[in-house]
Each structure stands twice: as structure tokens, then as C-alpha cells.
Length: 266
Length: 190
Image (cartoon, rainbow over all chains, first blue to last red; front, side, top):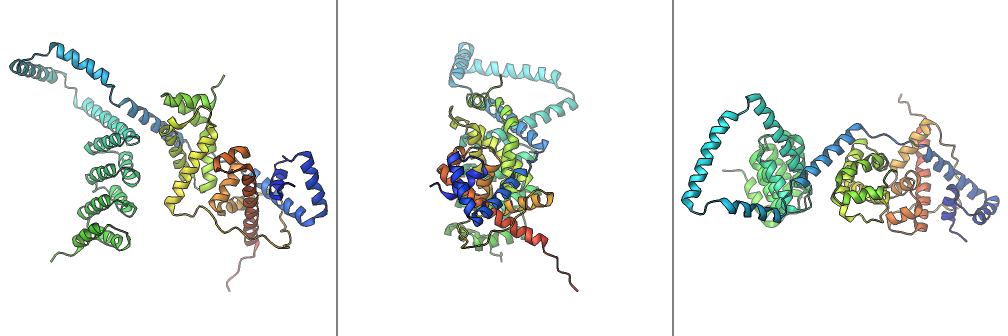
């Protein structure tokens, strides 16, 4: 005989074979409790079928499109294959002079020509500002894409690029905080702390650093993040770090150092 | 003729990542509603869908040519939701199975058709433990066969049906409790 629970569900889905339906029907004819039980389950099942799906917002599509574009940028920014480098090196080697004095003279001449041309080709200030904006935007995209790569080296490159930005956008800073909280490589997380430290005067970054502290388990990261917080902010953060020390399971050397750091200076 | 999901995903796997855009258009609404049924939060659900498509890109090399794309994406979505709940510190399962009633009178239940009743049912669904909510959502809303759900959950078809049945019973009990609370006259403070 089929399991009663399986039979009940198949009945709700109208997927019983004729024999099974007959067997269940004969049982229900003689059992009021099972009949009522199945009827109540059927009403809940039918009710579930009447719940309608919702439509996601247009913002989701925009976010996906941005993410896909950044990912493609990152793929294209990867180093070219070694064969290309070898061919380029061989071509340069074919005409670059061997004697150091001649090499220096060629370099100096190229510098003079470059400066002369550059002074004539400098774009107007507004155009320069626009170009700088586009470069910054492209740098953000490349950084974001590198932060998502499988290779820890590429993620480190992504952190390094974002660290060099003068004014990184909110998306880059949020990505750095996410790396701090979620990256599986300790060195990448440490690099993220270093990068975020440059912008710790921003409220959103400071909040992200504070929220990240209780989530860290690697001693080096705990120490680096706590140090950054203690340097970046005042009494409120000292209190937060002190509270965290009382609750967190810390390496003894980390705890000892931070307790020493928090002791009021005489 | 439109390419199949498998054909598109194989192209993504081969480096034509822009083809993921077509897969996004086809599948993001169902993934969104799957996450929404589990989390009850629109913004969180959109974040999770974004995460799922990012993971599809990141782990595209793991997609086998004979993989079932919807099942594969549901697995990603399940994992993303589980990570979300883990971060929230929420319990995923209810280890205590409700005791089997002994000679209990069948509970009266009207047809669930009105807007108020459907809203209560949605609330009851959100009140279920995650594992029960998940198996109900997969079986009732997402057009998956029991064989596909069994593959997702790593169990037999029979086990899936038993889980769905028990989850449905618990949903009914929660719904009846909420309906009784909603129908109870409010106390008036003198």
C-alpha cells in the first residue's frame, strides 16, 4: 500500500493512478476524519495556488547590466598572453641601441619631443575635466570587476586600484567593505583595510569598519581593523572596541595588545 | 528558433558572457519570487537575485552541458538565501516535528479566496521554518517536478512528497491560528 502522506499529496496534484485513486477513494468513503483532513489540505493547497507573483523593480535590471559590463571590462583588462609580450620584446630589441650613451640620448630626445607636442595638444580645461571623470569612472569599473575575480592576485590588484583613487564612488567603497567582510584571503582583507583607511573620515566607511569588526576571526585582520578604528575615531569607537574585546574570542596576543592600547594614558 | 537555456549557458561558459543577459530576462522574475517567498523582503530578494547572477558568472565553468539550468539556478538561489539567513543569525530548520495528533477532530477551514484570507496565508507561509517554506515554494510555485526537487534537496522523490505534506499540514495549522487571532474581538480598555 502506498504511503498515506504520498497519496494525499498526489491526490492534491491529481497525479494518482486510477488504481491508487480508487484505493484512496474507498478509504475516504469510510473515514470521515481522513476526508476532512484531506479537504482542509486541499483548500490550503488551492489557496497557495491563488497567491500571485510580484514583479521585480527596473533597478534590478540596471544593476545586472552594470555588473555584467564591469565583469566584461575586468575580463578584457586581464594580462595578455606571454606570446604577445615575447613578440613585442623581439621587435623593440630589433632597433633599440645597445650602447648606454646612445640609449640615454634617444630617451632625452624623446622627452623633449614629447614635451613640445604635449604643450600644443593640451585640451581645454573643461575637456580635461571630462576626460578625468571618464578615467575615474573606468578605473572604478575595472576595480569592481577585479574584486570579483577568482584569483586572489587579481582581487589584490582591484583593491590596489581603488586605493589609488582620489575620490572613489560609493559602489567602490561598498565593494571594499564587502571584501573586508567576505573575502576568503587574509591578505586581500588586510589590503582592503589599508585602502579603506584612506577614506575613514567618511561616515559610511567608518560605519562599515565598525560593523566589520565583530565579523572578523583572523587575528591579523582583527588587529589591523581595531588599530585603524582606534586611530580614526574618538571616544565612541574606543568604547566600541572595548565592548568588542569583552565579547570576542581573541588570540591572547591580540587581546593583550589591544587592552594595552585602550588603557588610558597617564 | 530561440536558443535553449542550456545552449545559452554553454555560450556563456565559452566566454560569450553577454548571453547571460538573455538568461537574465527569462529567469530573473521566477528567481526573484522564489527569494521573495523565502525572505518576505523585496529589496533583499533583488540583492539575492543579483548575487545569483554574479555567481552564475563566477561559477559558469561548473555548468555541465547536460545540467538542468533552472535547477542549477535554484541551487544557487538556495545557497544565496541560506547565506543571507546565516548572516542574519536565523535558524534554518525546525528540528522539533509537531506531534501527530491523536484522535483530534478535523479542523474546519473555509476556501481561501478573499484578499484577507490570502494575505493571512502569505503571512502563515512566512511564519514557517525555512526548510518547510522552501519545499512548499519549490513544489507549489515554481513548476518543478518532484524529481527535480529531489535532485535539489538531495533526497528521494518519496521523501520530498512526505516533506511537502508535512509542511502543508503545518502551514494549515499556522493559518488557522492566525485566522482565529484575526477574528478574535479586540479587547477594549475601559
